[in-house]
Amino acid sequence: MNKAEKADVLLEKLKEDSVEYSALETDGYSPEETKKMIRSLMNVRMPKALSDELLKLQDEYLQEELQEKGIVTLAEIPTIKEQILSIWQGDITRLKVGAIVNAANSQMLGCFVPCHRCIDNAIHSAAGMQLREECSHIMSRRRQRYGGNYEEPTGTATLTSGYNLPCDYVIHTVGPIVYGGLNQALCQDLRNCYENVLQCCLEHKIRSVAFCCISTGEFHFPNDKAAEIAVKTVTDFLEKNGDCMERIIFNVFKDSDYEIYKNILE
Image (cartoon, rainbow, N blue to C red):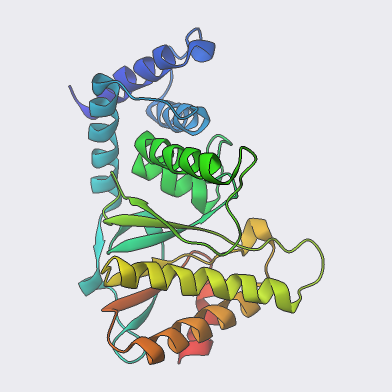
């Protein structure tokens, strides 16, 4: 089968997997429409076991998507300070690093909004449905321990596999949400995100990590202040922990964020 045929088969299997979408009419879809529908059905799928057939189809499809996007290695990302820190502008799901950081929500199951543009959706979509399944198992264990209404607190760091991503791991952290004005508590919450992610790397011997812009965008943390906290927290951690990391990447998507980090680091 060529790629288009594989995509068609995967779409049909996803429809069969979700009873409520089994009657969805998708005949005559263009390749781009098929791609969007595959991602949409992956996004809305509740965590549950994957059949071997569906898992194989999905993994083959996502690996072809990854090859088309192109994998970016550490050697292709220049350092900007002390041969450790880097700024990289682009799709974080292309990075072949030890871990990438996901700005998660407190439910820790990924974004259920079809094709939403948040980083949580992008990472889960590229990793595959088994990432939501792993997150669900983690949250189930935590609910058993802490109570049925448990939500992941702000500032923690949770490690999962990377699955179809080129990175080895994903580290999920729930950033602070700015409803009104910024205050010291929110700033400390964001510091905790960066510190705990780096501590997670240290504990699991992960030598390279790419941070997204935690809490900016959907969570409304001011971009310039968020970058200032990110760089200060990372540099302080490196001063205390010596050569624990090979590379730390500040991954940005917007031109404005690139300029903010560039001005801070250069």
